Length: 263
Image (cartoon, rainbow, N blue to C red):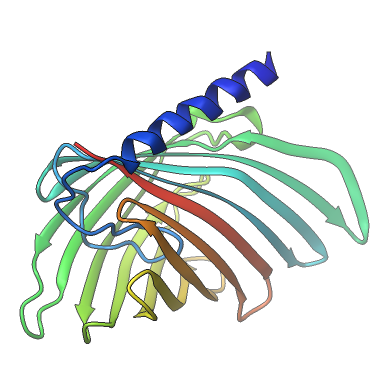
């Protein structure tokens, strides 16, 4: 049955890419919310579905406890309801292995993360020194998660996303927001700052700083950098590498594929 499901998925993907390879009306450029941590203020076009998926490997060590996380599938589906409004659904399948004092535990946590449901709305367009501004709001629904990843309460987050065009080849983006979750009532404040540069019309690059600070724990600060490659006007591949400045994340590497299903 597993082989059959994989075959069905493979041929479904072939069908999707076959449709996207045909001549279609493309109303706007492909702008994604991956691979960086910074969310774009731009929504997807009306009546358009955009899928952003990938995989990652992360190691994190603190207080003698090391965890290795493999995200086999991180998928975000975005649907344009209006020209400046989109719905968003995200769901990850992850596996976490833990080592304590150099001893790797036999128990492995694996399964689906809470279902992410949310929206994005464009608030203002860029004009002079005024940036393009968007607002994102999400809920992490615990009932859709596997037992190993199921919190007792619903998580909530919001962030304002802003972007400036510096030239025809470069831009900056930044986010500010907060989240509540992981069965904790404390607020976790978020920030991101990214610089993007178009090397060619198809190859892009970026470098980013991001982090968080809670009301009870020390702040965490990270960096990452990567490349995007526009395979076609509606298909984009990406790769990323990064780590933390402070104790914690040793490394994160990821790769992904984003595509738009035309109207």
